[in-house]
Image (cartoon, rainbow, N blue to C red; front, side, top):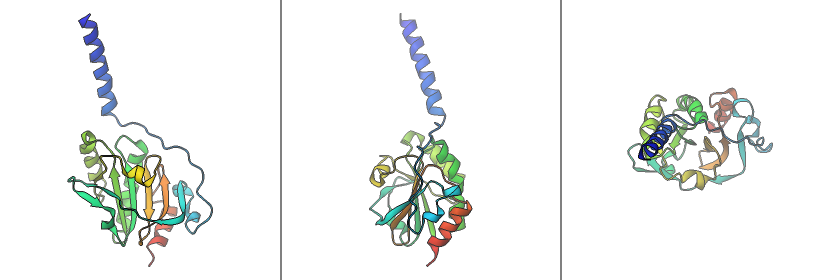
Length: 195
């Protein structure tokens, strides 16, 4: 009897190891098209087809998360810049796919845009997140160990990105993967960074 229990336990541990060692293929839900009104709606096509325009721009709430050293960060640190808060995880395949384009967005607008990738990975997977961000220079690693940011921002899906203007007002969001270096993204950010 103990041999059978041991065999079942070993099989369960092997499955758990395989499950935890591979990223999950998380697909964001299909969403309706972005609202057709508002000054940013024209950019909701092509690589930015999942762009959802915020009908009434809302103020950036007090968002807190951690930096790579576990120190608290308030989103007000990025005041005066177009702020792109991206919630992602190493187990989310679309998150991993779009991250290099977010890094390219940051490189394209180093003085005007702050791309803030906030990992929601559990602490045990944080070294993987750190390594992944390390190859996506110039991005910095931020972490939300309590998975609270998605609830505060009411983001339902991964990756989830919220875009704020220089005055700290939400202008749009993207739920699911986007191409942040597409012609549509470039046109959107060219317009956003204008004084």
